[in-house]
Length: 390
Ligand SMILES: Cc1ncc(COP(=O)(O)O)c(C=O)c1O
Image (cartoon, rainbow, N blue to C red):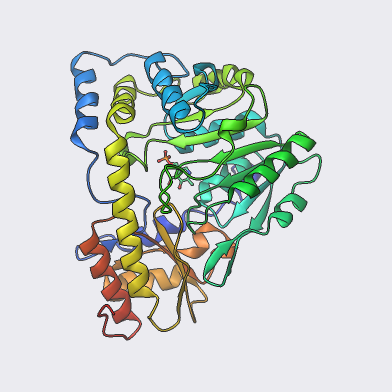
């Protein structure tokens, strides 16, 4: 009944676990990629003020110029002090996932080869697959307590003729961060073969090594070369419900993507774009606090989970997730449903992020610390341990 490229797409297994939990009110939910605190007031107020001014109309496909200028200023401060990134390279979009979808619709023909580092948030692989592209998965490995990429394996998976390579770093679900040297080598490879390099930078501000952002190549990109950065207000500014994101792309691509925005959402709502401007202008402290809070929760969670029998966890270098293996967990979807039913603990099954994730569970530690601690005690109880911290 539906298009053939949609047949193999699995329904969201995270949603499946969440749906199985409907009706339970003692549940601790760590399955989605967000915390439990609302967006800060200064951002909400900006949206409200715009509504009160009557900013309720259609606007430009690529976003209001004030937001595009704010994003350009922000990116130049963060990455490219030479002010190399102009507004003509930026499109504001109705969420990061919408940016990913616009990129896929604009770039991929059926049969195009797209190499993607996995496991990864399912939407990253689904968007090219929906367009009929051939997705080649390049798995990370967990070695000596760290997630690592065999770069040569990625390069081999993207020979000449490959349409695109997609890298999400910091990675959802593992927290793996691609080192700068690997980025440089990957960019050189893509340049040599005319391959599009697509960076999903949703978590670029959420790194735990004291840096202001994760390694990457945005600062080195010429205005017209085949590189796209997809980004979102959701994570760094705790704005998941606002559905606001952006992409940076070659100038000609941005002009063309305006058409695709027209056919999808036509434009991001103006009052939400005003909130995005407020977030960029006043959000530095918020980002620093978010990062520090996440780092504290990561450390606490790893401290509590690492000693549990059969649990193998690699501390994430970025993002907001712990992706850990549990010995004897052969079916992570079933395991996640049992966690809900037996101890009221809501985690995402690893298989939701691809076959590489089977046997693992993803824990989003963006919620308040006491909830994370309580959740860790529940997991310990499930695994037959007393659940006290070391
Ligand atoms: C890797 C990755 N990219 C992009 C996004 C898009 O976020 P949003 O659609 O909320 O802007 C997410 C959200 O979870 C993500 O995990």
